[in-house]
Image 1 (cartoon, rainbow, N blue to C red):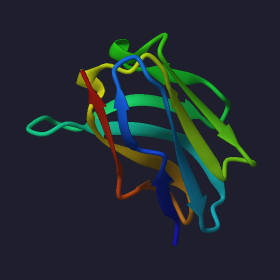
Image 2 (cartoon, rainbow, N blue to C red):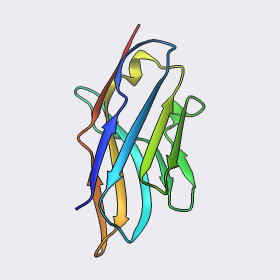
Image 3 (cartoon, one colour):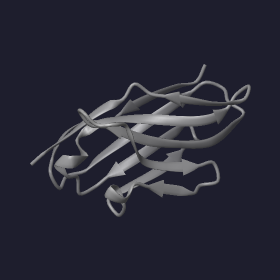
Image 4 (cartoon, helix red, strand yellow):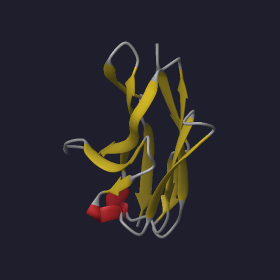
Length: 118
């Protein structure tokens, strides 16, 4: 069973930085993509950033130039470096993985809270 565990959230002042990490466990055949989503109170979950198995990245317009997604340890970890944080970045951030394990499947972490004070 694939599990995703996020860490690194917290409270930071506007303009500050945080680094989120997602550790993946469980045996898989192939990574299709991994990414970070966020959900603010009263809003729908939205894509923040993703990275494909071939290393292509995609970012929401609202975070381009401020956030960077990366993977380490042969895709066992995915990170989101968040700089120049704004109050509107406040949300629960979820790690997502689309992997092949007995067919293509999607997995989610439980989320980590990021709060940016003005």
